[in-house]
Image: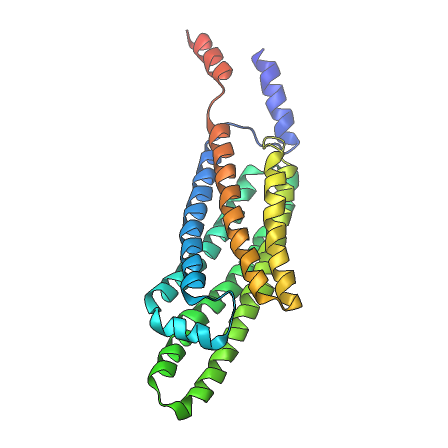
Length: 261
């Protein structure tokens, strides 16, 4: 009986299948929880920035006024969004552990794209955190003859940062998320519904980039906020599934106890 079980395990390993119940499932689950927690705080602060600053009807003057008057909220929002990007990269990295060997090419493509997206995102967040904050304070304090020049420089920073965040970074994360989700779909030990939950989430992120490319920034911001919420749901769902997979099978545990007795 044991020889048959060992043969089955060997065959499954030859085909590159990951066995449920391994300890690293729970480890990856904790990474999912950590990424979800960071994303929750980043989303809450982003919603606060949009609400207080009334930034759905976007204008550079309105944004600069908000940044100058709410330095702490703005800086925390930039930091948490940067941490959220880093946590997504770590999550993509950990997905390589739990997918079947044949699906790892897809998760590795997702990891490479997420690394590119994270690098671009961090560069944009630093510009918003440091350069734009200083310009906003200078715009508020300086006399009127300098305001036009400062506002023009600020708009250049905003335009560059938004282009990096939405058109480049978000696109890399969206395509990487789509490929990684397909890798999860091809993994025998993970339920297929994770694919059907994940695909709309990453497609929503892709839609945010597409709408921004068409020129509707306010709708793009709404779609990206919706993506952040959807990502949290997807990451928590994945964490729950991995936690359940990490628990030993009761039938297997009872058989092992019977062998020892």
